Image (cartoon, rainbow, N blue to C red):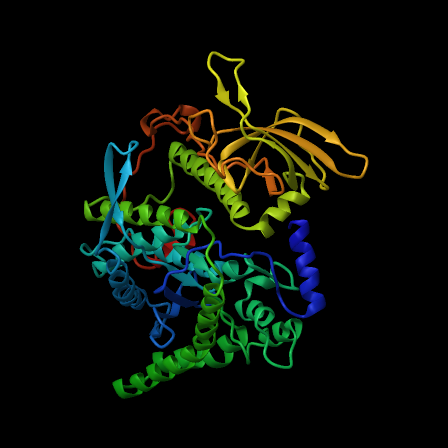
Length: 508
């Protein structure tokens, strides 16, 4: 936790209401997201119990599994969920746009928009990941067939779960993480995983402060858990008798009545969280998007387009485990994305940049001198190298020769020439500028900071990060297991023990 966020949490506790830690929205918010509020049965390995799904507050559809231990009902539930998710995904495949590549010498195409899934908390993301893993290898034929939409649903859920691990992606969002990215509550990080408590701090009811509202939200009789876990009292006193009544129904009429009762009690558990999800959407929508959010969403649209093309071309499902090379490439890609995401957030948001100012990675000062016409003729040909002097009252932890960047002119580099501490607690920093000023010997207006301009300078760079070099999968060295081999085996018998120690395999 950064010093600034710790201070904001202390202020939230003192004020009784959450404090902003961002001035802009750092994620994309679709005008038509698909909200999924799942429930899982306690004591079973990712056994789906119910889900409330829809794309609008008044468009909630409830799916339930009356007996979560029944394998056929589980896959029937997956087929029903596919009937909601897959048409939603297909609705974004209508229009494409051309994207120049290879410096404009060629073009590629991607969809103009992409779907977005919203779940209440990180446990909801895990639920979808495990549901995708347990369904994407199923087959619509053979000894234990499933509906053809089930493996396709599994592949798409796996895609969204993998995108959720990608820093800066907005394809699959946990509402608690999205809210706490922009506001600091007066409670612990573990308590921030509870959506009703988080919204209690952000938007407390009249007459209550954030702490009181959060404590009230932890009462399951007032605010049921936001899923996928259920409350033990609800399991023992309400759910178990309702499931038993369904199992022991003597005839069809009694079974229909028991099914209707299950729908009623499960809707009662999910409806409060459904309303909280859309309250959270409204709070996020009120924030203006950051300047670089659209660029990151373009990456999500690229990924959506690529996976759709892979599915359409008959490509296989994602493997259970990555090979050594694939795992290294994936880790490298995530690390690059994390670095870029941190820099972009700081460039977009002065509150985020303030965290870096506290650590010495950035400082803000006023331009007191500027020489925009300075030319360096010491090389083979003269080049434009303006110099500016910045005076700051903040500590300057960068050495002479370091390269700094400004969010106001991200394409420009500022090399530190002199650092002169002053007697009044201020420091004079002389910078030599390069880049972002064209190719001539005179700088266009606005490209060189002017005297009196307040300038933020940082060691953080938003420049392109080149990818690393990795061997081909078939060249994996023996020290890392050798070339990967994957041969999917037959479907296991119903109820067979997990084949590789994974409880998800018990789904089969």
